[in-house]
Structures are given as C-alpha cells and as structure tokens.
Image (spheres, rainbow, N blue to C red):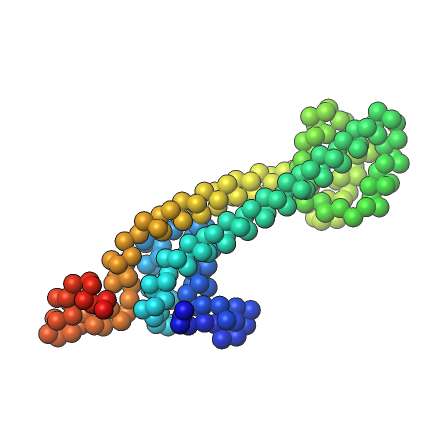
Length: 219
C-alpha cells in the first residue's frame, strides 16, 4: 500500500520494490543473505532513493520473488517431465518397430509429427534406446539428422540436460533456503543500515536522533 509503482512498460502498476526484489533473486540465483541485499540496494541507491516504506516492504517482497521463482522452477520441471515421457514413449515405439521389422515406416510417421528435439526429449529417448541395446543405423541417423538442423548433437544435448538438472536442483535449494533465511533477518538493523533517510537523520549535529531508541525513531 502506497508503495511507488512502475509508471510504464511491461511492469506498469507493479510496486518498484518488488521488481528490485526480483532482480536481487535473479542476480544471486536465489542465494539471499545480508551482504547480497546490502550490495544490491546500495547500488540501486546510487541512482534513486528507495523510500522508507519500500525498505520495510523489502523482506516480504524478496520472499514473494523467491516464491515466484520456485513456481517457475516447478513449471520447468513439469515441462521437462512431459518431454521425458514423450522421449520414452517414442523409444518404445521404435523398439517395437524393430521387433516388427517396420522401422522405416515408423520413422516416416514420426518425421511427419511435430516434435521439439529438446534436451529432455532427446536424452530420455537415447537413454531408453541404449538401455535396450538398440543399435539400429536408421534410427540414430534420423536423430542425428534432426539435431544437425538445430546445429547440435546427441552428446551436446545429453550434456545440456545434465547441466539443466543440476542447475534446477541448485536453484530450488537456494530459493527454499532463501525464504527461510530472509524470514530470520534482523530487519531493524538492516533497515537502519540501508536507509539513506536514516543516514541523513543520523547526521543531526546535536545527536538527538542517534540517541533515540528504535521505537522512538520509528514513531
């Protein structure tokens, strides 16, 4: 409530501090700690002053941004699982075609279908084929031709899939830990450390403001 919002563009109407929180989460890969927050907020305030209300809202905005990031990770996992299932199903179709001696006919049908030869699909299909000791030249030639169109290869996509899986696990762990750690921050201390308004008030030549306790200063 009463937080400054973005005036135009894709984020129009969204509180500015939420966009800042998103950026903190994005640039840190979800690894949130006091130093990360301090570094980013100080960098922001070289160009604009973050209001007192925005700073007080920052912890909950960071947690919201972390939850949003978790949601995106879950969506990517669901997409990956669907593609993995498609890869395994396609491998089963090809294995059955080998036993029925009609691989070429099945490959013609597969080529007519719209498939996205992404790392999830290809790596799961290749794994299923190799696990079943499939060594059919036509099948691997078809896969290699399709991947050449995308300027990639089987080995590259398998390597990419391993990287994606590792990255996903790390990001999810970081976000979960970040939600917990943000809730444990002593925000009273960090608010006073980050607020430019607070720093200006502490320059009171009589030292009255600095001598007040937190409750009095926050009144």
